[in-house]
Image (cartoon, rainbow, N blue to C red; front, side):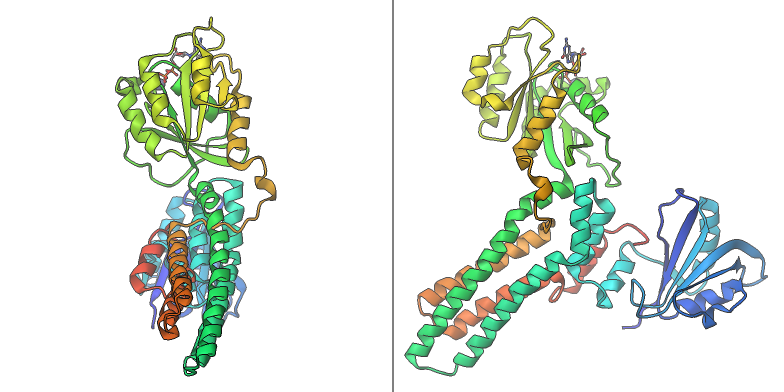
Amino acid sequence: MISDTIAAVSTAVGEGGIAIIRVSGPESISEVAPLFRSRIPLTEAESHTVHYGHIVHPENGEIMEEVLVTVMRAPRSFTTEDVVEISTHGGVISVRRVMDILLQQQIRLAEPGEFTKRAFLGGRIDLSQAEAVIDLIRSKSDRAFSVALKQVNGSLSQRIGQLRQSLLETLAHIEVNIDYPEHDVELLTAEYIKDKSRDVMEGIERLLKTGTQGKILREGITTAIIGRPNVGKSSLLNALARENKAIVTDIPGTTRDVIEEFVTINNIPLKLLDTAGIRETMDVVEKIGVERSKAAVNEADLILFVLNNSEPLHEDELTLMEQIHGRQVLCIMNKMDLPPKLDKDILLKYFDESAIVPMSVLEEEGLDKLEEAISELFFGGKLESGDLTYVSNVRHIALLKKAHKSLQDAHEAAEQLIPIDMIQIDVRLAWEQLGEIVGDTAADSLLDQIFSQFCLGK
Ligand code: GDP
Ligand code: ZN
């Protein structure tokens, strides 16, 4: 495949003292060369060298920018192609001037993720590593960042590789014995398939077990703050956001009627949903209280159920408690600074003592207890020592489940002594499904879909 020359700004626009424009493609050096005036012509520059000079207008030779240009020749570059990196002054105008000139040539603007896609196509990284680059770009906490980083370095790929190797051996074994119709050989082969498929299934199960945690780390624990109007939901959300550095995210907000706020509590990213809204103006919406809460409750990993300790339990609150029974709930008795009128015994019918948190958001009492309860609920405080090979991607989880199912079919077939050439199909299927995780058997449309999730310039 011949690829054309692509360019994009690969640093955040408007930030920092310099910006880097990355140009990639087999012709990238010869295409940038006429635009760059320096001591050594760019076409003669050695790989991995940096050159001071000026970007000049190709027609009139006018100096447009003072820049540093780095040359990385194939295959020793991120994309495995020839790459030219142009460092300009950081301002938007400076970057635009250089980009304009580049794009007037045979160079086009890269699509989001196109650099990473070329790295994948060039065999530089596998698909799960490419997806981890997406996670790196988006990761919302230090922990999520280190999980993603580990995946870039290939720890998930490595595990998948081991499982696939084991299946490949099984396939080879089947291949060898398929031509021996003797009954005892057939029996032995069936036993062998049963053992191997069970092993690999267990390996998949171990990876899947980390899947939920991985999902939480990637997207944040979806946390719904629910309760009747005026109990203090918005106050609580504001207090949590104030205390815990709100995380900046570049994922566009969804268009639902709830307010989302990202916070990290003890390194755990939470996506807080105020079922009514952060701003007081949103409190009109809040009057629909219970209905709105229902929707948020359904998608929540964690529910913060807020009650007003200075009022008796309301009928709506009983309804809510019935509805959220059996879910991960922390019940917050707010407004403890006021005279108590709430009967805690009723609450104890629905919640464990440890899940009930007395608070006064107004006087900032009990916030630490709530934060503690949250971390204990999810990680038992043990996350620090945990294994960081998380499966953090919905696509990976789905494929792992498919492969598991295929192996289960193979295992059952072997048990029922179904002819081994039939069983072979299921084993091969599992091998392919695992391969899709690392991009070994991925179709083109899938690739496009994955890489389009990237930001420009990556
Ligand atoms: P929401 O309707 O559930 O979102 O409740 P708000 O957060 O808007 O709070 C309703 C009212 O209760 C506001 O006037 C808050 O200042 C007040 N409030 C919130 N928390 C407390 C608290 O712990 N103690 C007292 N006395 N008032 C509180
Ligand atoms: Zn509110």
